[in-house]
Length: 200
Image (cartoon, rainbow, N blue to C red; front, side, top):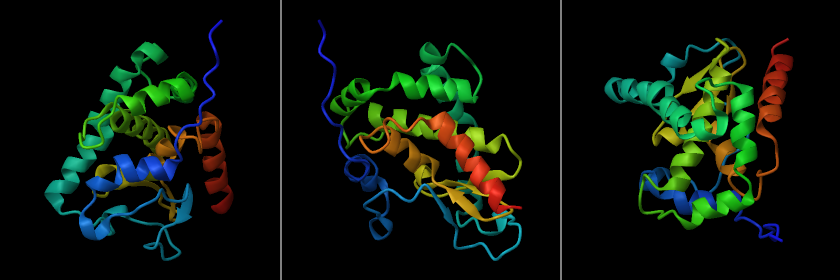
């Protein structure tokens, strides 16, 4: 009989420091994941035009827009197709990927990944999961990306309330002991409900 995999995964902040923190500029390098939902500093009590608070130069901003909205989403659909059997980004697909990556599979990803390689399997899989999360929020016109560098520092923002949702940090938490069992389809739905309640 196969033994159940009971080994604890590393904490999300440990994995963030190992796989993500090194890719930031030295002066901006965080050492831990952010809160799931928070009020962004650029919000002044009225609906946001996110273009007004983007800090990337125009050329790099356009690159990030294409990468997050097209390239990374397409890669996620292709890489997760054997799990979802779908070409759609929806809660059902998210739930299938979420359930597929249990502790054993996440441990395998970590063990196969060299943190010095920007295209290592752990970082890529986490970011593709984050892209799915972001795309789900963006299916409502009220949400959009506030782009950043590195791309996985970007967040989803609800333009009417200035509430930021750190979807890539959510993904790191999913692929760690901290959030492996959270259930992310329900988490997305609860976040949308929370934002809507704050917008009444």
